[in-house]
Length: 88
Image 1 (cartoon, rainbow, N blue to C red):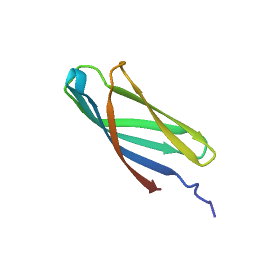
Image 2 (cartoon, rainbow, N blue to C red):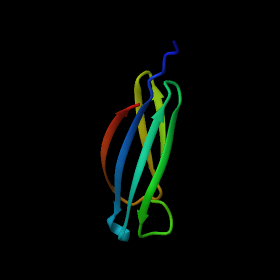
Image 3 (spheres, rainbow, N blue to C red):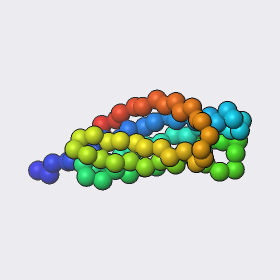
């Protein structure tokens, strides 16, 4: 009998606002890992600007997945998020 490896998926709803420039962005981010490599997918991005306000990457260390966001400029931003964990 073959044993399936557990796969974890984290979903984030992320809201970013740049009040100084009247910009906002909302994006869904999905992070999946297979125990060794994290994979980041973004979808449903809504913004009032031509470029992304934030880009995402992920790291995996032991059992800890970290989602990282890099802001696209040096202005102050407010980042809010909701995280959901799904075991697949």
